[in-house]
Amino acid sequence: MLLGEPPRSQWDLNFSLFGFPVRIHPFFWLIVLVLGANSSDPFDLVTWLVAVSVSILFHELGHAVVLRTYGIHPWITLYGLGGAASYNPAQARYTKGSGSLGQILVSLAGPGAGFLLAAVIVGAVIASGHEIRVFLGAPVGLLVAIPPGEVIGSPHFTALINQMLFINVLWGIINLMPVYPLDGGQIAREIFMAVNPRNGIRQSLILSMIAGAALALFGITLWKSIFMAVLFGYLAYTSYATLQAYNRHGPM
Image (cartoon, rainbow, N blue to C red):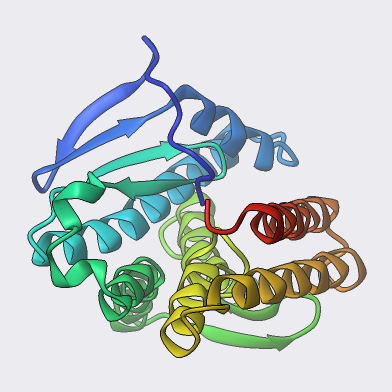
């Protein structure tokens, strides 16, 4: 999730992956480390950093690959709480990717890539003779993981696998919630606009505001997560503020 592409800095990490320019802003590393700060083991921090970085990069590659199929040339930026596959809007104006269906497919491709990566990891774990379990119910809702007490290779490698599954499955599901600017919020906007071009944006913002508030409440009551409550509370507020601006001035 990226609210706006950050300006370039001298500490950016720049490289190319499968022909896509990639830039990792230093703020990305800082936020990832803060999220993993509950561990005092430096090896746990390293596995967490690897799991988040690889998973989010794979997510953005999903968006980028679909954009490329439409003849658009995107670049990837990792920053803050997530990332973005950005492109020049003028380049997409006359492609199928600019339509509602194209935008929906692009948005779905990110979580879809994460689910695919998780499926490959699960298949590899099972093929190696180990077990994978699916845990349902509160507080996490859905968790795919190696059973407690089972070790693959080493405790840290086992932790890395579980973290990759956690990020790509659970975060992928959360990212499909109809809250803007998550992928689910962008999908909801395209659907509302296709059904009701006059009021679709307004309706999608109302849904985003309600869903964000509900997820904030869910985060503090079931997940016992102040971070989730603050994040979705903030997203609910930004949807509310955008709705008020839209009502005053129309499309921005």
